[in-house]
Length: 284
Image (cartoon, rainbow, N blue to C red):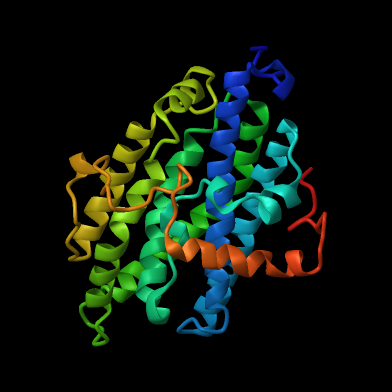
């Protein structure tokens, strides 16, 4: 590969291009699908302030997805192909982000928000010195907004777990943790071992998935336990994925994904489009 300062997609081997594509699809698809789920809370959140905050989060996540899809254009893709024309089993997002919210449960939204954003923080840190310059360049544009997202999630977690609140918030948090934790672990599921090895050897990411998962657990588990919540697994078991939980990273998704994809692609298909307005302006 060329020096980190000058490397482009043309400098990559076939294996490196495939690995970069796999990494970018995970980054972009996670953000896009999470944003789609967040939009379901518009005008349904418990307060006007929380409604605006989660709507802003959704807008931010769409912007982040746009940044990553733009890098995928280096590999010959167009945004409309990736979002509106890609087959459902070609998406690589974690199944955590595609799950529907049960009965409009705000605790579910907040727990998902928290579990995801801690993982996102560590994932971005591992890309800060990426050997692919466009990856490293976009990290700085995203981190400031993600810090706000995590702070928002933590504040709501603490608020719902408050002993003085007589609204069953802690019980609802516990139910959400029990539901979501097995899906959160899929954030660290590999595409396959060979692809992960290439991502690391090429210097696209400076941490292994195991290291990312361990760091995530070392932050998440004490925080949840500090709120009086039981965590389904110990910190050392974070890589033990439930075999009955679809991983997403390998194209295996829950039934909810087909319905969500049908919803956000329906207008595009009904209009017979062969291109689409981009979700945001092209990044500078």
